[in-house]
Image (tube, rainbow, N blue to C red; front, side, top):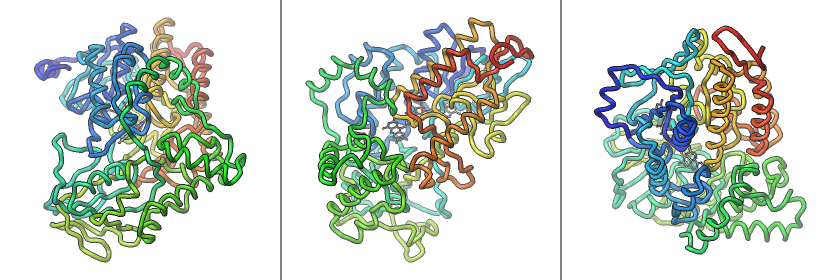
Length: 551
Ligand SMILES: Cc1cc2nc3c(=O)[nH]c(=O)nc-3n(C[C@H](O)[C@H](O)[C@H](O)COP(=O)(O)OP(=O)(O)OC[C@H]3O[C@@H](n4cnc5c(N)ncnc54)[C@H](O)[C@@H]3O)c2cc1C
């Protein structure tokens, strides 16, 4: 890592780079690796004091991967995947963070990663065809290319309740969890939010706290992860066939080595379907998700799976009133991101756990000793917010980005994010997005590898053809927008306004943010784009001349 003395020295001078990377999560780390391989001068700037992004920040008890560890890892180095030992089927936060740190050390990437540095502003210099980049440390960096990897789920939703300042106890956000463990023993604790992070942390906190009150707005579908240690034999088997497993994942719709077992629930008789659902439920995790292909496009298939999960909640939760409160209704299974849990429903059978429906009893404000809902006052020692994120666009728009002719990205995206291929934005030349809006749903690290490789392919193309600028064309963006909207309309996603629509953030434009056409389809489109010499881009050999595809 760049030392603090080096950092001080750098503030006094201007640095020039071929490629500047924003963020050192899994996306940024791989970008540094690839850029260095290509012989580019590269530096990633990371606002945290460590690498790992998501897994650096989300240290809350119970934080864990939903994708099997052996797949939630890089594919770019076979030595790396052969060496690294995952201990559990679904790795916990600490192990994933250790993996990210290991990758940085193993490939000596730290010397090109500058920590504790926030990128605050990017200005495109039209005449010099380069980006002027500012940091919170007063540095100025001049970069030919910029790659934005600031995270898709990295800006937490701010607790929107009045009076939080008055609260005298401790409060924490799951996504900004302190490095020191939080001691819940003997404490009265509140968890606000029952999305993925809430569902992971609630059982763990419940087992430690004296009393836990869970404030729920929307009940979620959750599937038991059935996490367990991996055996030596399993690890050996995976390592012997890793290449094959990865090849399969690259060709898949989800970026994971999985394919649904059945096309539609309609293909199965009632008892067959019940048997299949039960057997996958018993395996848990993604196996349950990957069984009926059309559950996200066919409401009938969807309803049968949804009803199965609802029944499971009723089977586990003793109190029928609580079971009903926990049961998701009114939106299809999978239209919001499904959660994966360890003992979530059973937690509500504990004597020390209470569930509050904030639709019936909205939180009014915080007080010195806790919070007030519309019908009562509650006292807490610790409050935990698990409120979700300003997904996909939050971290990008936190940076003040000005493209050609000073165009502001915040203004350009005022009615919703627009990109071409999720990789580039018209009016913002030589700038790549690698995990922002407009891409397939991210699962595993292959999406990051693909996004970085594709951007590097375009940089290489520019190098070979002496191009100074590449810029997405507005018409290509229009077409991409239509594709995203049309693909979403074929699915159950429009049936609920989730964070995929920006609906969890007040004032955020409601526009669908991901491409629901599968990773395999996306890769093919991106491959053709490159093969056809980037037809969706304007390519320039000097600041004012347009050549090749965009002329
Ligand atoms: C709790 C949780 C669980 C998840 N589980 C899964 C899972 O099971 N499977 C899965 O596929 N995905 C999961 N994800 C999604 C996860 O975010 C991605 O898998 C992946 O880790 C994202 O990597 P990234 O590099 O794109 O972004 P991040 O890991 O978010 O890293 C971005 C980095 O950029 C830095 N940064 C942001 N803005 C700036 C700036 N202006 N200047 C400098 N630095 C900046 C941030 O500090 C951060 O370190 C999960 C996310 C969360 C929050």
